[in-house]
Image (cartoon, rainbow, N blue to C red; front, side):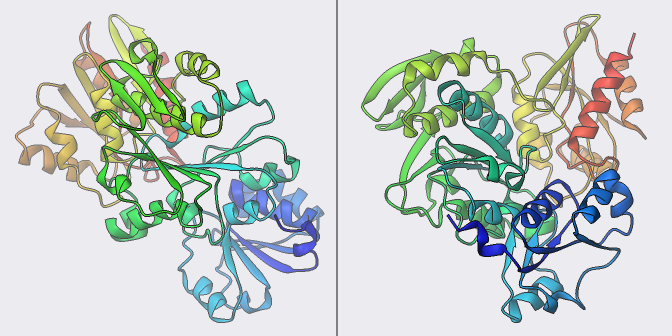
Length: 455
């Protein structure tokens, strides 16, 4: 942990006026730094609303409408928000001048006095982080849940003392700018192609995910999905602890029929029946096993883990039950922003599906998703930028029961029109939301709003 005075008097530029950027700027201002908050969007100040006035009132300079190429040399440090690539020309220029370029997670880590659980993976991060948070908070109320889950680490880090844990969801974008970040317990849930528009190749993306454990030592733990070879083969100095849905492990957490078995830290017993959980499908079982493994490694007794797992509800936008109308069930899986997540959402359904998909193009391949449609999907309604690409893939695999909708509302109406009693309507886009929405949360909330207006 750094002395808080390390940032005092430093000239620091924070790039990005989103949640984490604003939180980082406030934090550095509190620590006595001279802060400039930058955003390429010329309307960023307007979008920030009253927060912009507050920031300027604190003495923070706002620099909007351009990248800081011409002024980057004036700073002692640059802090990058996760939505901004750390490889833009101005960031490369800063490094060439010897100016450190770090991310919001790295900044928070330098100030965090307590052990950290860091959870990453392509899919299931938010569910697993939320579940770990509930288990830990039931046993250790002084636990903070932060990171990519919605509360910036930098927003809460100065509230933390040495007693308790910080449980953090960490995205690949955040890991790009981590240098010394070292969680006591890390977890990589799965690695499948995603964000290739940013990382360019799957190999780059997988390497970034694996880097969550690069600074860990023999006294730390790394929780890994044994069924995913990219996870299983990650190199780390930490003690590897596996969870598995498919293998009977000599050590770890795994499925024994429908029972989740814990064979770890002196335990060898069936903890609970997956059929009693409120989170559904194979992804639900995997998230639960990862959370159990993390909790056992943190020293939480099994009898304090079982009930929080059984009572845990699905997080919003991840295979979230919305309502039933005339025998048709509606599920919001707006967080299914890539094909692997959408596959898991589809596999969790136990009735015929009318599927709504499509959105922003992250240059993924839809083949494995569409192959699953046969015998599972009655009809597909596509929206957004990827509509043509998805339709082309459907035709290549002989699936012809698709139609296009111009808006999400039209898609909901069309899907309900195709559904019969005993079916479900599932929003699981297999794509990001940025072509039509601000984020997947907005997309999911609108979906639920349109569903509740159906009669």
